[in-house]
Amino acid sequence: MKLRTYKNSTELGSLHGKPIYMSDLTEACLVGRLNLFLLGDTGCGKTQLARDVMDYFPDNLYFLGRPDMTTRDVFYQLNPKFLTALQEGKPLDGVEMKELREEIGRRLIVVDELPNCPAAVRSQLFNLFDGYVEIDGKHYPLGRGDYSVGIGMGNIGQEFTESWNDLGRALRDRMHVTIDLDYFHPNGRDLLEILAGNTDPRVDFTSHQDREKFGNNIVESYQRIREQPISLEKAIISGYLTLGLDYCVAGGMPRSKRQMKSAWPNAVDNHGKGSDEALIKPVSTRTAKSIIRLSDSLDYILRQRGVPEETVQQGQFDSMMFAFRMIAPYSGILNPAAVQNFYDGDNYAATDAVIQTTRAQFEEKKQAIGAAIAMMKEGKIYDRIMRQFDGRWAFMHELVRGLKGYAEKQPIHQKEKGWKDKTN
Image (cartoon, rainbow, N blue to C red; front, side, top):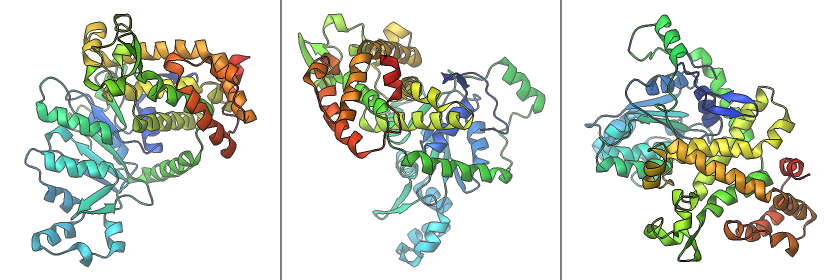
């Protein structure tokens, strides 16, 4: 994805032998229909990045958050008839559904300075990120077809009040991917290129609608991605992140972090306090879906750039871990005290430690996982194989039974090949 003004050649990491940049991650979020929140200090490029994306979707809707903003402002920008009806106390039935759909058929919602908005306005904006507007208890869908996606921007840090903490919880529900642009800041070469091109400090809001074709291609790519079935390997990795990471030992007994609630992580036994048992909570089902979708989107983009299918299939674990690294740091699952004490407050470094442990766990169990996948393909369950899954891997017993039925109904497309190759 080529961004007209925003420059950033700092690598977010590498996947399938290719470097991944901020432009690639942004494209993956658009292709996967994943809402993206850009956080960082003033001048890090948040607004310019979002503005460049708006080039590809002329049917966008842009809001600049203000403390004096009202819900009426939101309704007016969506459709002035909304505000007129509300002011006159008339029902919206006078606005024909066809006309209504055309007026709010915005495929891209952009909200700058989101933390500045009052709580009531944020609530309505969050609905937009979910793909609808709510008026008088009725939901009116946004977008065209079933495609609409959102980009939000704002700062985060000690200077924000309790209302920011409330915003953070709401954001985790609506924003699938949150990226700290201070962590992935443009480098010196980017700065030189930016200054050589234009020294105007203002964000470039000029429109280049000739890029709309690429926006249509993004929507078509989304339709392809959403139709593909999940691979068995990614399903198992998701099971580990949602169920395996739920395991810890407290009082000498295996416990669920979810069930421990506020007693976690302080009640974790001493031997586990320096491990991921006290560092991270399990991801939610919603977050697991976001990780899979981001992984699939990145794989799709790299296929389009010539990465062989065999390389993509053998790198499914790496793809899932890359997506996990982009999503986990600001998803609310890390223990803030442990991040501060052991990783100097660096959420990405803490996430890297979790990935390192996860990689070691899968390396240790790779033969058992490969055998379990082969067993599922045969439509059988063998106790001698399942006995190898205990402790944090105990979730595999029920997961395998569920995946066995899934594998019988869904095409696998050789997606289990990655495990098979690793276990030979």
